[in-house]
Image 1: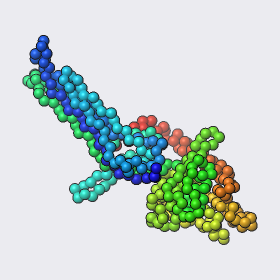
Image 2 (image 1 turned 60 degrees about the vertical axis):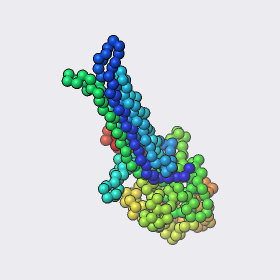
Image 3 (image 1 turned 90 degrees about the horizontal axis):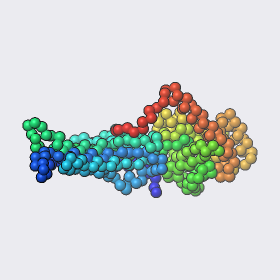
Image 4 (image 1 turned 90 degrees about the vertical axis):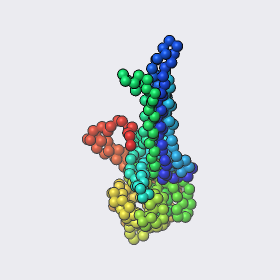
Amino acid sequence: MRFVDEATIKVISGKGGNGCASLLREANNPKGGPDGGDGGRGGDVILRASSRLMSLYDFRLKRKYAARNGQPGMGRDRYGRAADDLYIDLPTGTLIFEVTEDEDGNETERLVADLVNDDTEVVICKGGQGGRGNLHFKSSVNRTPRYAEEGKPGEEKKLRLELKILADVGLLGLPNAGKSTFISQVSAARPKIAAYPFTTLVPNLGVVEDEWFNKMVIADIPGLIEGASQGQGLGHTFLKHVERTRFLVHILAADDLDMENPLDGYSIIDDELADYNPELANKPQIRVINKIDTLDQETLENLRDKCQDSGVFFISALNGDGVDELLDAMWDRLRELNRTEKEAENKTGDPDDDQRESA
């Protein structure tokens, strides 16, 4: 299945069933009066976050989703059946924008929901109420009303869906820095790997477990080159996915370094992050130099000396040198972030447990 991170769909909730206009006629009760029941409620359209989904590809194939209508009321005071709600599962991390059009045909959109947490539900379109049957309209001056209400129409909305991948770690680096090789070493992800630029055309996700079965989700973010923030390469397409990561692992290939000033190479992507969104420049980073297997021992030692106070990790993702030490540092950073966020949450109080909301 292809990775797709944007789609536009139309959603329609169900119409309420019509109320029934009925008069009771029985042999022993010839003037039994009105007995028309109410119509059933139309189905809601509910968006639900699911961690099992990784792409919006299906929403490029099917663009219209409609809930069922409520059933009409019947005689003998029988109510119509309410329609089942329509649940639409979306990848966790999907932003939902409602698109509206003015009289001149110009479209505007507003953010109505952000499915950050798994299993979050949002009622995006409410089903129409069922119409009242004629038994509700009996009065002292009208004992046999012969009319009933029609069911209320459902809602119809145009939605733009935008997926921003949720991951603990974002892998950054110029094309061919070795990010795909690294993620294949530490997880079960099997990205395409080759010796040419832009091997990775879609984000790859890998999941790593520690000995206590804690999980760390790693995203390989493709397409970042100089000028990415202006749309060069695959820039805008995937820079947005960096926003949802908790910290970054920034990888440089040894064969791309200026050996006199090896740390200068990090500024290329750091500058692009800052130009795209200044907050990204402040995300925590672990810096890595990869492909040390391509260097002779003297060059490698000289490189280590120049970077000894920078905290840079030296690895060969191809043969595994230094990978365990880097992975330990990533786990330490993740646990530190978890601890800090938990302390902040305790200070502000417990969040609302009710995950279902109405847009």
